[in-house]
Image (cartoon, rainbow, N blue to C red; front, side, top):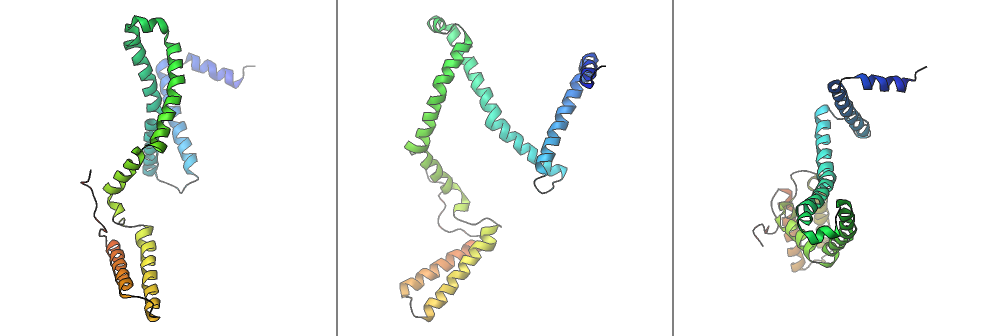
Length: 207
């Protein structure tokens, strides 16, 4: 008696290549959509348009962060070996085959890249400069977003607390003229932010 798996294998073997290729593509697409659908079941339900948008984001993330990295790494090894080492007899004597060159490059390159990344993050001013430039060029460092928790809840609450605290302090005669001026300045800045204005001077043209 032929098992279902064996019968299915025989059907695949007898199937024309074009039909088999179409079946593979359709199965792959169906599996992808099914996986995304099962994954998104843990989240609020989305329509097809939203599901496609989320799949597009996942695709860009996976392709840009992982597939491109792997392909770029392999491409660099192949390019260096076949366009450079192959044309330098002295190096070709050391690396007559591609595989030993790729292994040695990986053994040296991975720790070297980790070390460079550690220096970039921990021992240099590069990351600090990147953060400073991002903060200086972002308008939301000096203003609030058009809507959201900060503008609708947090900052109105802080402004209300500031006003109540000022009233209590003034009722007890605890504020000096300088402190009253500081309260005025803070209330003005909070009001400006809540109205969509800027506080401070965005240095978009700074070096």
